[in-house]
Length: 535
Image 1 (cartoon, rainbow, N blue to C red):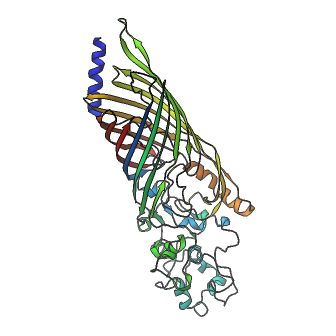
Image 2 (cartoon, rainbow, N blue to C red; image 1 turned 45 degrees about the horizontal axis):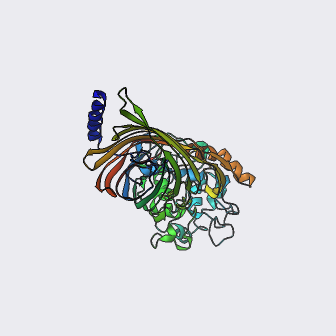
Image 3 (tube, rainbow, N blue to C red; image 1 turned 120 degrees about the horizontal axis):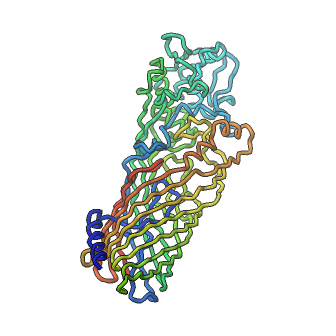
């Protein structure tokens, strides 16, 4: 009995030190919010003591919450701005892998005979991507070719023609490669992937902090049928906001950029607000920045603030948890051994990620149905303090996606210009956890603590592109491998809270969840409150 008294004091001190929450929510394939909270006890894998194990009980939990991020973790687990999680956005790399361009559309202005204006949209030879094509012409050093240079003769390509595209920019008529200090000179042909130097880490790149917020209401309805059996349903409605800030890193690029003009031209034709909005696809939503007849939405990749109110995925689970008393030599109950087991399904009622909105994120498993299996071993001391060890997994199948953005160069990050059809076979999401719970550590008060490690390995991607030229461009650009590598992530969190029993059927609780470390995930903090009604 002295041993039991010692355990009583030990757990009381431990709970006071941590004063934080509970058991894990069911794992889900969502790197932005992989451990969703529905009440102070998560999925309620703890054993709840009843004088009669045959009793029927209904419990409803209503949980409002607020979540925000303090940056993200990149592939090395280093703290970075949210938009840099999978690498800094690379505008220059949109010029690479152009064999994957959309069918029946022209990337680059078609060559014409010397003396004829190039690239005027009213011509049949015009590019479907005028801003991106001008950038291509500038960064491949068109001045090295006498025939092409003749096409830029101001006699034939007038200032008025140019101003239609860049109203505030004087046309660079003599962009040469490696020709000393001549006006408009660039140090090398940047438009060709073979010339790309990864050491020039910031040239043509953005660092993108994001103001991420999620505000919502989640609910869980559980039915205990007796003998440890039960069923629970949980889901939620959330308002998601992602507001980006574009920080051009070109000026701070490395000293291997030989010419000052390189940086000037990069900003003029790619990373300044005007070309960025027209190339990526926000110009049509603005009244400013209009460039005459050239108002464009070239890559159909919206980069404005994302704000949506949507449903989350819905989880239905069946569970069993029944205690077995372990008695000491005196015949008294020393500890209750309470195994827990559940299986369930994630129904894809949430919002899928919008491939044409850069800062769109899914509110569930991106349209995938998942099957869950979870288990734990709980040790219940004095029917008051519980120590639990658990694990679980969410298992997904394969799903076809149309018009999915796929890299056509290993150097593309943040912006994948071209789209194709794919099949994604999703790797399971699995977790392990250690949890502690205290009932009545102070009269009518309860609390719990949990550490949880969650991991998802990389998916398997199959390209379903039917055009041989485009397929070859995606394959050569390592698009499949890039998507697979970016699909894996891992996360370490703690979550906690404290609750008060107003009466046996009404409970109030407050808690939070905090990120510790991880790879390719947001560094989120969540605060929440729960009203529990027990019948």
